[in-house]
Image (tube, rainbow, N blue to C red; front, top):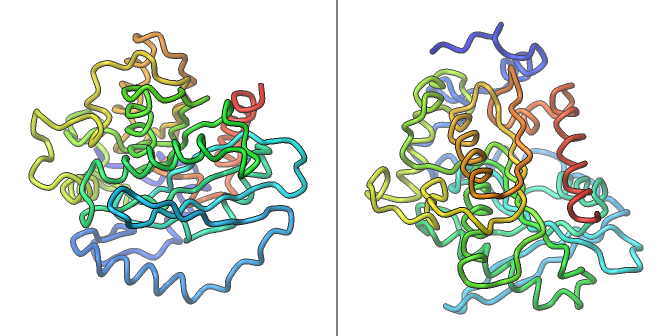
Length: 322
């Protein structure tokens, strides 16, 4: 199915048209992941560093893993809070192959202020260097560490949620499954923005979305191959590695899912929401017409992005503080 500019929201279509493209016509060429990371890092280095927001304090925790390597968790805390705050453990976008918790301070600072909570951005390990479920094990370590050390960071341990965007949605969901299965206190919420959940790529949208140029079928197939290697698409993939494979979803936290009409993940997101509901899990599902993958990140000033943020922030605030 061809996605024409006329089928996209006009503000999103204009933003997409203005973005520089790789030689393959998409925003990113995933055929050489190290080279892509180097190009993205070089482009970021050319940008002026944003001024820190004085209303937010930033602290990096360095938590030892079982193998004695170190996991970074970057805390963004609204300044001046007297009482312990709720916390949102956040997993960044990037298809599980790109990005870092240290890439951006503006977005998590603004989120912390919007929801009056600590935002804990996890620097989970990336594929292909660390295949799944290594990233999710980092998520579990971050979540349990923050619960155990909540008092040190003025966090209310009874009000800690999990959230992830795109590839980070896979990490957040797998972390929630681990937390449930290992008998740890259930997160206050699970928030998933256009999450990357299923390696099988069998849904209608996974076949339809081939030419938007943001994150289409070809990018998704390459990313899942990096995440799972030769396990991708096989019948025995564990849900901790591809959480859309989970068949038992009872006991999962209340969930928010935002999906986009012109997104390869659209149908797996809707299907996952339906299965959560069937398992008795409250779900707040939103499907945004005329939107493409990660529209709020690529066109943050658009009306559609602002409308989404109001809805999302409202859900987070109500569940973390209510």
